[in-house]
Length: 161
Image (cartoon, helix red, strand yellow):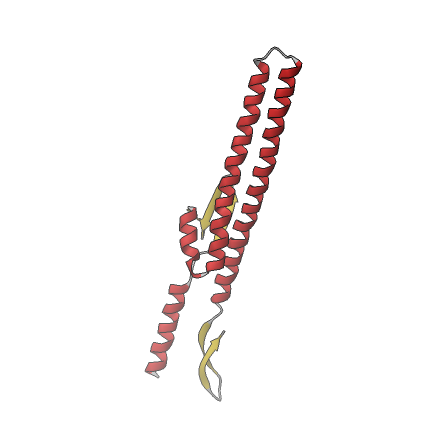
């Protein structure tokens, strides 16, 4: 009986060590990512370290986060190009050549912005997929437990897989 008690105690502690935090994603007003692990603010490297047991989730998360940062950078670049084109037009004489230059620069800025938005959107979906997959797999792995069941006729250990 003492061996069973120690075995259950060992599996209980193992389950506690295996328990990991739930990750959530929010974006602030500037569309910057805010990650939380069990309600505590966390940075992307901390979240990636937490996902180390689930490689596909970690890979989705890291690559998606990288795509989001690249997409945000391209959006900032597109905004700069648009503002530069507007400033150039306002400092010009307003001739047809100046209008054509402004339209060309604005078109380049809009096209760059569309590409940046698409890259950022794809990255956000990958981050969300990685977080959802991690939370699901983490909760699913908690189902693998050992429990002691006692009935009037018998008792024994039950392994749930």
